[in-house]
Every structure is written in structure tokens, then in C-alpha cells.
Length: 341
Figure (tube, one colour):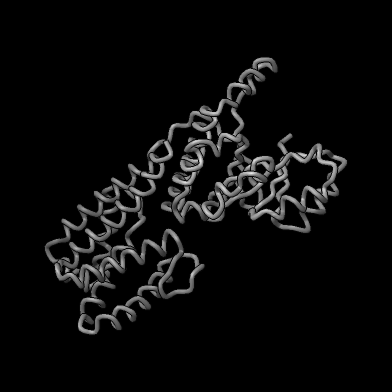
């Protein structure tokens, strides 16, 4: 199940770079190995800049924009000219070609609108007009085909067998593993809760949720939606480190785009003994119901000494509120996450 999601993210990346390079070859039909290499450098540069905010010449960490990309391409051009002094013409022309394609990329419109937009952009650029020549219809056809295929990828439905219970604060979305059983009476709810503690079912449930979150991150990035949100999935069953479960989790988040935005939190009982299972692979946090913790100093010291990103407090006694809040104010890794009333 985890491999399926990993393949969707992987497949999107391969699909995207392949098609952008294909469009580049239509515009600049050169089979010269050096020209192919230069086109690949520009396209890969664009993909890394847009999806990972990783730059070759611009300072890392800047938000992606076409202006930043132009600056990045200018810097890459200088590097390429230093390596290939005999290819000045190809390097400069391929920069124009790639920027033209990237300027169009990510426009999700109908076939008619896309054709209109592309034709308008071609008219604006005399160089593109010249090199397109009688290939304009082929370029438009291939671009529309790429756009339609991408739409199908982004419209993929990841089956939701389980409800996502989320709590959002300070751009962090906390997702617990609660199954929606509110319509059941107390007796039946207890039985269902026991069923959902089954390790195999818990595994399927957790993988399903992680897949959905990872795909949402990919989709939001493609559509240019809110890039500030971070996601943390709370995993409270020791089964997560049994068998291949840990590997499946790593497979899902095995991408810089996903690891930047998605982490998991283990209950402190699990984390104290098994955090090495996930160490250095994913963003790791800890969560704890503090309702029955008496020695707050000892508990906070023990948890915060671990190599974790956040310590999430899921509940506590009202009379301890001032103490809990004072700890949270003193360390920005502490998140108080009370249940909704």
C-alpha cells in the first residue's frame, strides 16, 4: 500500500521532467549530446527550484517565482559557459527555450484556453516564433497532452477508508488516528475501539492516512496552494515498529518535498524505547496526554532531551493549565493541543 503512494509521487516527478524535456526538444531540435545535457540541466534546475526550493546559484530558502527562476537561470548560464566555452549559442538559446516552457508550466485550463494562452505567449517572443516555425501545432498538441495527463494524476482519488480528525494551529495540522464512531452508543463504541486496536488494521489505517497527506502535499504544491501548512500524524500503536511497517512509512515520506511538510509523532511510551527506528529518516515528534502526570519537571525534561521536532500535549487537567502554558511559552517546540469541546 505504501509503495503505491510512493510510486505516485515518483511517477509524477518522472512524468513531469520527461515531458518538459520533450517539449524542449520540439523547440530546440538538436541531437548534439552537449545540447541534450544543457537542456536537462535547465529543466532539472527548474524542477528542483519549483518543488524543493533548491537552487544552484540563487540563495537557498527563497520562495519560488518566475523572477527567481530567471535569476537562477542567469547564474546557471554563467556556470555552463565556464564548462562549455565552445557552446555559447546553444547555452543562451536553450535558456530562452526552457524559460518559455517553464513560464507556461502549471497553467491548468481547458484545451481551448491553453491553446489561446500558448499562442499569445508565442506572439510575445520573436525568438520562439522563429524556432517554432511550422512546429507550433505540434508543440501546442504536446503541451495540451501533458496538461491533460497531469490533471488526471492530480485528480487521482486515494480511497479514504478512515476519517481524518485534524486540529490546526500555527500552520501545523495535527492528525490523530481517531475513527469516526460518534453515532454509536457507549457499549458499541468500546467494541469498535477494541477492533481498531488490531495491529494489521491499524497498519492499513495509518498507511492510508499517510498516503492521503503525502498526496495532498504534492497536489497543493502543483496547484500553488498554501505552502505554509505542516502535517503531523500521531501514531500511538507499538505495531508501527513491527515487521515492515516502519519501512512502509519511510517509503511514503521518502521525498524531500514530503519530508519537508510531513512528520510523525509517537507517544512517549513508544518514543523512549524505539525512536532509533525512525531516526534521521523522517521528522519525529512526541505526544503525550499529560492529565495524570504529577512530576511535570521530570516529564518535560525527559521528553525535550530527545531529538524531536515537537512535544505535543494532547490533554491535561484544568488545574495544571498555568504550569503547562508556562512550559509551552518557554519552549516553542511544545504544542498544547486540547480536544475540541
